[in-house]
Length: 505
Length: 76
Image (cartoon, rainbow over all chains, first blue to last red):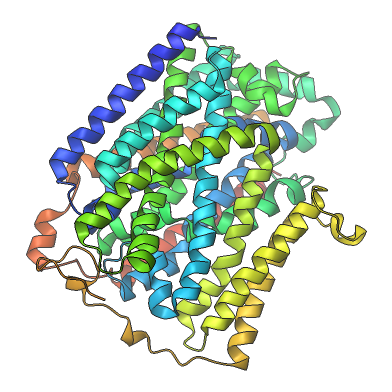
């Protein structure tokens, strides 16, 4: 436990460090046009992008979530928790390569839909991306406020306000360059946690042998199941809903796409591969916190294992742990905020409000949006803390992903995919899954058979409805799209900063 | 899963995490922030990766998923 003064000191240290880094990269990289702000000019090196991608997928909630999974299902909780996040990096590869073939230097992937279909399809995609990205920010802030507030005694609302204020400011300054550079420091911090502090905790609890023996003793008759990697008892509740939702979230997440467009084109699959597999190793190390919890605190509920286990560390280590938690939290929130700022500037303002907007105007809108949506995420999180659970937030994000990924794939690889089919698939899937999810939590009244539907089945329904409807409607009234018609000349592909000041539309 | 396998699993996690972190930091230290020189030399955005490059990435994924399945079977 750290007192409030110590907590504020940590927040101040983190704030100064992040703002200084963002200012450094703002000056170094010359973040003075939309392309640099949104996609780092498409010239980021693979090391920086991989670190940024990986740490964006390392959520602050993982520190609580992975030990909780271990507390519920044992060692199998490691892959049940990690696989959905990792799967996302794998699934996005064919999408990324196809998009970078068609749009060598795109700014936001959602702009593809206006070229492939029309403004109506584009608006449908914007709707889903916007709420999933805001939700992503809310999920991170939700956990951050609870953990940091809980360990320092500072009001969670104050913690969240400070976090969002600082993140909004450094994104305003450096855009994606700011996000990626701070991500690198945050990545190193996460490594310190997993490579130094997790082993320290393990040996504080008696080392691997001591932990194993205590686990076996505490678990009694449950030990064989808890020590089996093939323990599938909780697969329907812990694995399948997230595999079907978060497992494809990378395809929908604008934060992922910004990094896809930021990295050098010739390194696209490499950074997704190394970054994705690396996330698995990090999550696997968090599981050790859960093993220590099972060994040392047999009476503690799975959801509290992490906090109890971390209490075994010396006080100085708790302080450093808090700092690392701040870093990991900031890396994800800043990524979502940059994505929303980009979406507002390019997809909403430039594509629908002012199609003659200059690059300077787009950049200004992106910067204003970074502050405006920081306030929106803060307000939404304050609301969510008292009314929605962390798991519900994750599942709502999952249904957004299930609505888009299938129709998106059809649009990229099947020339007959029509605008009507795409829009129908996305919107009908959203409505169906939202009603089913709300019904399963008793928020709306649905027939008893539907109210008892499992969460993973809701996600599966989302995929089947979106993909099936898009395919059927396209078969009934097929398009004959010529992909060559949108394949862009790399030199003028971004539609943004041209040396003659004009636009490419 | 016996004690030896449990200890080995944690050691494997640590080594894999160390290797991942070392690789990414090595890339950053040797390549830096951006690829201005390579971009300038190519006269525009760099070409898309070659198919052999993509296949190597997919092979890595294959090894990774294979290792997970193997771990589940051995650790059952």
